[in-house]
Image (cartoon, rainbow, N blue to C red; front, side, top):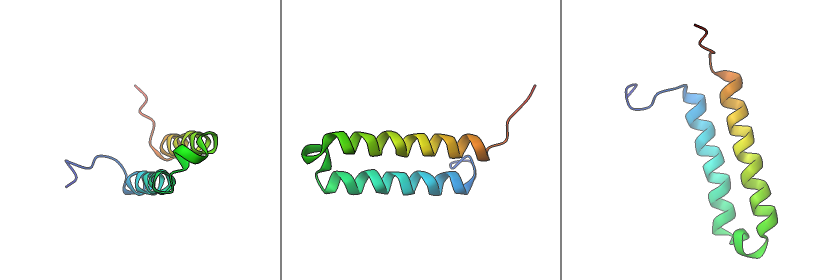
Length: 62
């Protein structure tokens, strides 16, 4: 499975957590009833995910 799921397990866990948060907002129809808050949650979630991945991954220096 290491050939399929590249990266750290914590990265995959974080992706699942963020996807669950966005999915829960969608199930509650937040994208229809409160669009601005929904977009804010999506942007903040993605920013946290990208920051986490950049912070915890090893930087390759040539």
